[in-house]
Image 1 (tube, rainbow, N blue to C red):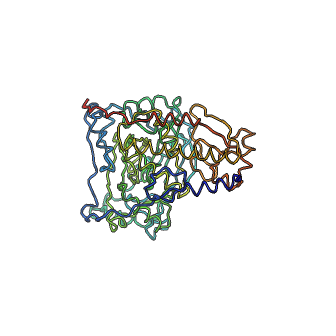
Image 2: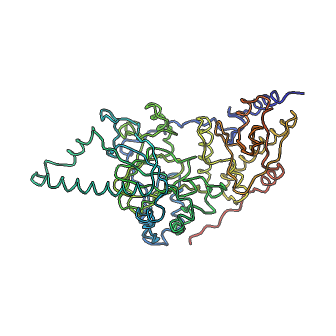
Image 3: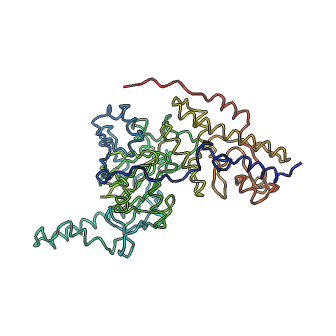
Length: 514
């Protein structure tokens, strides 16, 4: 009779996949461990490094609901799509998201403020202005909508005053003495003015923001915050900023540094105005190159604040889409696309994530889920929990997507069954715990990996009903034979098996032109 420590050790090594990942991996066995991809080959010629941005111009509501629009946006060949004139075509009341309306609605609402340096959008200098760098200065503090609104307004007034002073100062000078190239040369090396960017303002409360959220239901289903065909609507709980709306309040120069979206989900961003935003976009298959640049510049690709040097990207043959987002324009960022944004004028933006029901989206989400584990980064989308909810809720007609989800279910089902048997064989009691409605997915309190079904909770936490969850690996580091832990079970194995059996490939959807 083996002790539980021996049983679990044998089990751990026996269940290492062929790809070397631990038994909690949901990647296919034949897949290698996730790693950043090499640069695409052959490299693009220099004249292809500034490609035109895919853009759709809408004239009316019918254009917005035309099915090929959805297909165009989710096509993996289009890393980004700008839908021009969306607000006008749908008669969206963008005034509901104006600074004035926001102050009237909830003036004490919290705002995360980022203090940054005002720089030209295509440059990034260190604070001394002596050398170009990838590190983007951006320190964090908190404020309220009312206080930031005051700052936004006073910044605009100050700019008008400066503009008038410049005009009167230069009225006797000829145009040739104050060209834009001279101005940009003077700006290049600081000292840089400090600006504040109001970011990550949570609009999830449907009581506080009822009018605003209702207005967004006018959008076509594929870009809506909530819809049956949006994977993130099936998580079963709130993931702030992903399946809820976030607002951004900006002055010129406000920067959203380089990033891919959480777990590589698509994103939707609407400029409320009145000013413009400038976007820089790199296709998903170049994220490995971007990761390498971050490492060379001592930046963390996943968690750091970085602003790419366009000269570096040009030399490395990385294509960059560059475009202006005007008020009423919607920017669709496709799965895995790398992007960074700078405000040109004074404006507000709203944004959220969506998960189209495509094999490409699911594959990229799972790959990032596994890469995050290797990088000790939390996946805010619990992909195992989500996959089981998809199997419960959705009929999947895409064979590739179906196969990947079915495999994830099989893998986690086997993990649960094998662990249950090992724990019981070693004499460890498994306590039925169940789940409440809309209970969030669980994460290890130490390593932040998702923990599905079998929760390892300390005796003390269990008795106090605080239920601080650990994964098996972290629990064993604390107590090798789990003597200080209670194992709680959230799902009956027969229920999981029934969901697995009933999840079958749906017939293909009829093609529609309406």
